[in-house]
Length: 190
Image (cartoon, rainbow, N blue to C red; front, side, top):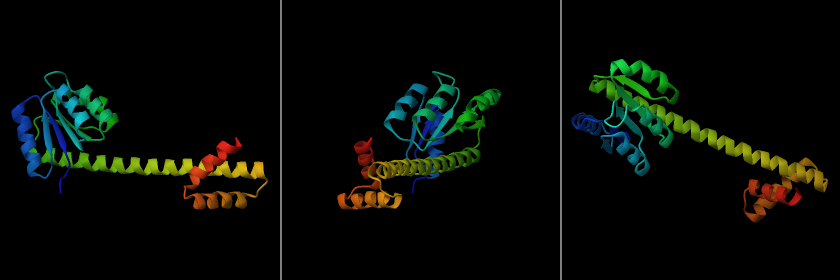
């Protein structure tokens, strides 16, 4: 089983190849390389990555803008490798987007542990976002159901349990969700 798909963005082909080889040996697959920020941006649109590793600076830009683009255009975990003198500036600007930043020179074990941690954080965030979206959807459906129920109470002089039972029965009879039936009731009576 793959640890995840990775995009390595590095201006030096030999360093990118070395990182790629190490990640493949450790179970990451597929591992793609880009040698410039523009090439990396093109890859964002064609492939969904679990992890993006960016070694700064890049031939066509410093790399900070690329990190923000990676955050906006993908759900990937992001690891940035930076020169020690640029580390503090990068940390201040990138900590808001949960990018992990490592100083150069980087050793194999540190990079591997950071990559696995970034994937773990990404997976946790994805799970939390999915749970949030599911809860939001259920709350929205509940609001619609309540609105329809109270419209029936007001317009048809039903009791609250009668109105709810009417929505339930109509949903079962029509083989629709209660939310869809509630939306139809709202359209009819508003």
